[in-house]
Image (cartoon, rainbow, N blue to C red; front, side, top):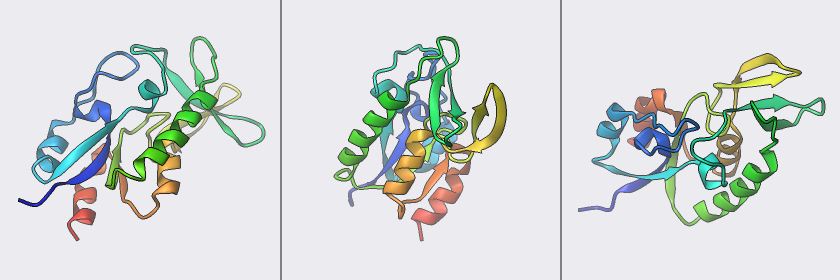
Length: 161
């Protein structure tokens, strides 16, 4: 039997309780569709970067300079450097993991592809932003397909070509 290809995936989508509220967002249909032919490589940027579970919610905030920051909604703590430092380290490690693509959790300030909310001066300016890790992954592994969980069927079509 041939070795399964490996897919990166937001850990909460396969049932890992790493979300801000200590819960998961298991996507059973996705798991059923992919697990027979693909191995999952789960990643949770916030948890792996050292944020607690559970933790305060965070959002992306746009500075005047145009730089995105990931800020805690209650404490106003800026987690950007902590998460970005982890991202650089993790992306380096992923070079050797031979992922054939990634399925990201939508609406996440770290993992969203075009569905993260972005605020400026306390006002929503976009709900079509990229999460910090997703954007860095996409740039580093530009030839690998990336989708959010609701687009996993497109992902399968791309991989099966």
